[in-house]
Image (cartoon, rainbow, N blue to C red):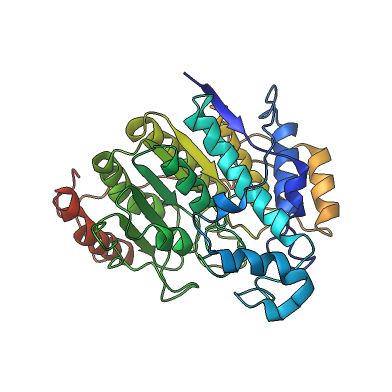
Length: 391
């Protein structure tokens, strides 16, 4: 039996820096570790240091031409192609090394679980789920989520479930395993008609003998805690129970929060905490407790991400924080200074009590019509009745 949770962290992960004004700023990671430490969440935790992914490990997901382009991009500039040198994915020095370290960090976390040294592992710098086999996309150079999953498959893990709660569709991971029946990909995201990358419709269910292993749950803009949780519980536990994964991998982007500047969902930090607790329960119930938690998006760098991911760390470590916990004044002063006087909350709550009505049949609300569509798209593949509220 492994230890409860391994935490992969090193300050060198902050080298994945796309530029001072870029939305994906490494300050969010630094402030999260500082807040979790200040609140005692990380007391006694010895960080596991990440290693760089090798070309062979990256090559399980990415083409050799793309790896070469990433390496040469700091010299060739925009001529590198492959989605590099854009506003979303600017070129920076040591880009390959920084991205390979994040991918290697996700492999390091996976190693902790596969080896039996830990039942859970968390790597907040991971979760770069948009990168495709041959091009960068959505702030993501290498797809560490897919690289870690591919590594585990090569180690003999037979069934892996990936659940993505980022506000954006987990398109790169879905694409990597769309025809692989060993990997179940589940994504809850803002409706693709209203948000990039404009994929992730319920009809996207897998191909080539893997039909039913891609599950997409689109949510209407402005969906709140109760809607999000209702949709999650109406679909995710049922498909996980039937798929029977040996490891649960989750991408825990914090950008579904109402304060996030790049999207329109309306979750509170309390709803995000409830989401992480639901994922922990899923890992316990359906994956023998094996849980690899990765970070992801999140662009309210000071007000949201550090609180949300401190709750994630607390959840993975079974050190759940009381939402009313006061944020230390020293941390607030540090964050205000780093954020140029951004006003900050003073507690680990948004003052919301997240609750939901369990799905008991479709209503005419946009959330329920979406639930209906995804249940009809994938439940028959598992022998489940789309209309049965017990499933």
